[in-house]
Length: 528
Image (cartoon, rainbow, N blue to C red; front, top):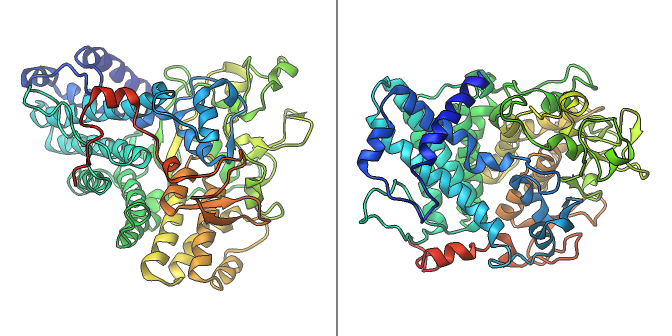
């Protein structure tokens, strides 16, 4: 299945890239160009297959032992995740010091901006115009492909609005000089509403299958759309929109996944190599996976992820143990953040689960520090030097936590179903407590205490899934690791372990300088 998918993508890349140029520098396409690109059923599928490998999905790529995948940048922005090679990459250094500048860092900002817009303008909009006129597709196939394209357009706009704020909405290919080639920004609210329109159409009109992504040949499913809808609504309920009505909608979509056995949570067979957390680390085919980025060592390999499980210099000091020549702890949580785990009860913090202190009996450093076991791929490390592990962006466990928070926030009280959802995730990780014991404790919490416990659990459970910055910006609350049990403080004015203090400007990336120069309307007031 994977080989077929990648071969289709490879052939379509040749034709599509030859007819496109950069965002706001595009060679305009005529209606004839679009018609000529969609001549058969295969063309329709190829146009959508492109969306699986570009834009935000591409931010999973670990192309260097030094420069991390773009999705890691959110963790860096909190100052709570370290990259040992940050000093060799100016953008990382500027993130830690909160001195990102639209001119100095233009190259990286352009990449973050342009890859998402290329996915939208080159591929999603192109597909959404071409698929309705593409011959050979059944009505079911046409609806499915339209839904997939809308999912990816929404995913990329969600990334853009979260990271840049008000951005231009471009909803069609440019086929005429009468098109607006210098679009103004739309307001944050308008961008979110555009995202919801796409996702609701994908959910209601696409006929997507109600199953996990691995059970659907790694194509987008109803569960993928529901997960993104839950996340988008949870963010709309928070800053900057503060639309509290969206909590109920977030809870509704998360519940549709939580209560569906098609998206069942992984369960441990033992507390060792077959625990939930080692299954997450090694398996690509679990019902819990709602959206994942596909890698295959022999075709499109996952890059340097396996090396991120080790500190800088470890392989040089231990030659021949693994097949890679360089190691670098590229997404390592600050030791203070690890206080969020109960060392005596939480399976995730135990050796060989989310973390490890040694490999093959060899210490990772002389301090007993924990490094991400989550990135270990034994076959790649010991045999092929080719990473094959898929990377999961949404899974069912997150939906349990989304439901727990959103249900309490929408109702104003801590209800039984919210308690049960949070207790389910905590009990799965507990070494000593039953679910009933955990529920008994949770029911004693106030609304605010319960919600903060959900925030903590999101950090514990989603430690390596790059969610923490999203949570900081939507809640405007920052994990204070200086306190014994970690508390939450307002992010504005909070100080990071790098001695940088958050200001309002630090919550969004600045617009890339080259995009400002290219589009004279970019800095005009947003359109509501």
